[in-house]
Length: 594
Image (cartoon, rainbow, N blue to C red; front, side, top):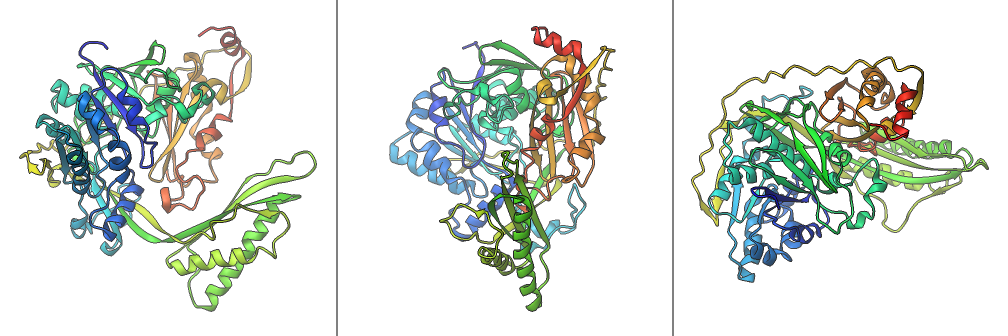
C-alpha cells in the first residue's frame, strides 16, 4: 500500500444494499475506514413514519443487524473506523442499538452521534418558505413527515478527533462521510477548497457502492459475474489526488468508463456541485488507468461554500396505487388500453355516484409489443391513479380487478400476493437555510464533546467561465452510428429533474457528440416526459457532458406515477440515438487508434 494513503471502502449505496460488502472490504489490505450511505429523501419519510409508530425506530436497522453485528469483532481487531448516516431520523437510537451489541460482545469500540439535522419540530417557522426549484408554498405543518438539513463533514471529523471508532449521523451530504475521514487524517481546514472538493469527489465515487466498479454500467458484460462484484475502495493522498480500485478476487471492473459514469451520475451542473463545505468544479477532472482495476483521479477544484444548507422536507400528498398486467396476441396494446380504460370508467362512475372528486392523476404505460412474426405480441401495461382519499384509490384497484372476466383475451399476470394496496404519496419540498441557524451537536458514548460549529459566511456563488466545445473538424464523409458505439452513459434523478451523463469512448468523438446532442434534439426525444427546459454541461477533462432535464419525472420518487420515476432508463434511450461522425474516425477506432 502506498505510504501515506488513506484507504476507505464504500460498503453501502442505499437502504437495502447487500450485506456482504462489509466482510468483503474488511479483507482489503490496509483498510482504515468503512463508509455506509443509506439515505434518500423517500427513505427519510419512511423512517419518520416508523418513528411515529415506535419512538425507538426511524433508522436503518439492517446497518446494526446485518452490516455491523457479524463484523464488529473484525472491525475492532483491525482498527477499522466506521462512518454511517444510518441514523436516519433517529441517530441516537441507532447508536444505542449498536452499543448494546458492542457491550454484549465485550468489545472496546466508542460510538459517536452527530445530531442537529432534524428540523421537523421547527416546521412552523418555515411556513413562509418557497420551494427552491418550483416556487410552491410550504405545505401545511400537519402534512409534514420529515424536515432535515444536509450537514457537512466537519462535525463527523470532530467526532473522529475525539476518539470515535464508529460515527452515526442523520442527514448529511452523501459525500461528507468520506470527506470527514480526509479532514481527520490529513488536517485539512475549511479553507482548503481544492482538497475539500477532491475528498468530496472521492465520496461521490464511493457513495453508490458498486456503481463505480461495473454496476449499472453501459458495457455491463465486462463486469463478469455481478453476484461477486467488488465494492469500491479509495486510496486518498494528502494533496487530494486519489485512486479508485476494488478488492482482489472479486468480479466487476474499474476502468475510466466505469468510474467516469459514476462521476457524472446525478451531478447536475458539474461546475457548481454545491455541498455544505465547498462548491466543487469537476469540469477539469481527469481519469487515468493506473493498473488493472485501478484508476487515478485528479483535477477537482473547489471554491468557498455559500454558507447555506439545503433542507429537504417530505410531506404527505394523498395516495396512489397501480397494477402491472401482461397481454398477448393480436393487437395486445389496444386490448391492454381497453381493459384499463374500462376499469377507470367503472371507478369514476362510482366516485361520481358518491359525490367524490375525480382522480387527480392517472397513468397508463405500455411496454414491449414486438410481434414475433406470426402477428402475436406480448406487452406489459402499468395502470396507476392518485387521489386525496385512499378509499378512492382502493376503489380503482377493486374495479379494474373486477374487469378481469370482461377483458379482451390475453390478460395474464403473476398471482398470489392479492391486490395492491393504496400507499401514501410522499412529495419533496426543498429550501435553503443559513448554516448558522442549524445547531449541530456531537456526543461520544452519550457525552457531549462540546463541538463548536464555525459556519461559513453567506455568499452568492459565481460560476467560473464555462469551457467551450471543440468545433468538429472537416472530417470528410459522414456516417451514422448509435451513440452507444461512441459513448458510455448513465442516468439518474435529482428530485423531479433527470440527469444523463455521457462520456465519449474516444477523445475525438466528443465534438461530434456535442454537435448532435443539442438541447432541441434531447427535448424532442424526451417530449412525452419533459415539462421543463434542457441544459447541457461540458466536462472536457473526461471528454464528457452532462444533460439536465428539468421537470421530467412526473414529480419524481413516489410522488410520480411513472414506471421509471427516477429516470434510470433515460440513458438507454439516449444511447440509441443516431450520431453523425466522420467515417475516418470510426475506421481509425476499428483499427485500434485512439
